[in-house]
Image (tube, rainbow, N blue to C red; front, side):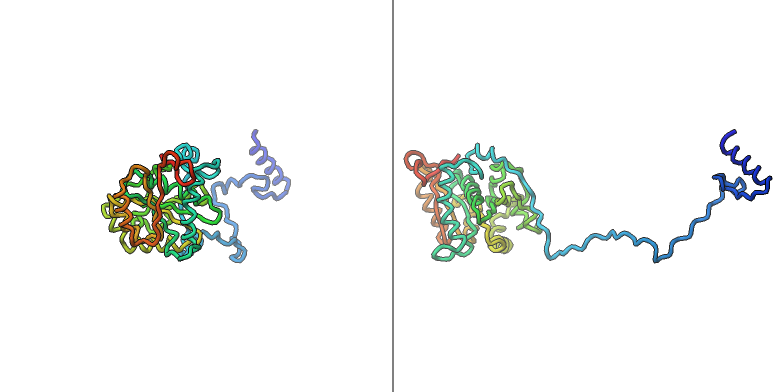
Length: 308
């Protein structure tokens, strides 16, 4: 006899002896009501019911959009092996030379010079001809400024014809400056690359366009430059621009810069080419030059540096 049968027999015995035992008192459902729906307990008064959980998203202040800069990691060991400056490396002649190069630029950028320079924190690095080391110089200048205690630096790949900054730094192609100018990207912060060097940020050239000169000459570019020049008081912006003579983009860009640095390859660039390059920059407020790839006695001083 199973447990249910024993319980039923016991209840039958109790009834015969005159004891009132309701069905279900010992855990057995009344066979007559088997399968009937059990009554639902009354609901608690509204005042005692738990408040519903709020699932609505938090209110976002759209007037202050969050910056969406992407984080990228530079291989500092690889860069150092390739001849570039990196923070934390042993003191070198190259580091000392770029200290000399950057000092007057920073002075003009921060308004410490005798004559104030409009947009002095916008610095374009270019050359007369291709292959003179302008990208090498622009990257090292940015690295050197990033080592400053009081300044941050934005390195812009403005060589929109043949961009090279990302490749030199070991980074894949990415959207950037041209995408902002064409309206493909609404917020500049979306295409900025924040590096593992705390004070260095990169703005890629972006998607190639057949209208690069017109885009750099546009009102959108002027608005962008105003934003870059005024948004951060401690930021210096370095533009790696195309060579001056074989392209028109640099000449357009130079008219909107506060300072221009012309890289000249020692013993290689024809004098006439250098003169023509400087002639295109007559309207620029500050034009400086750097002699690159020096060899021999001059290279042993603090006024020349090697480039690869």
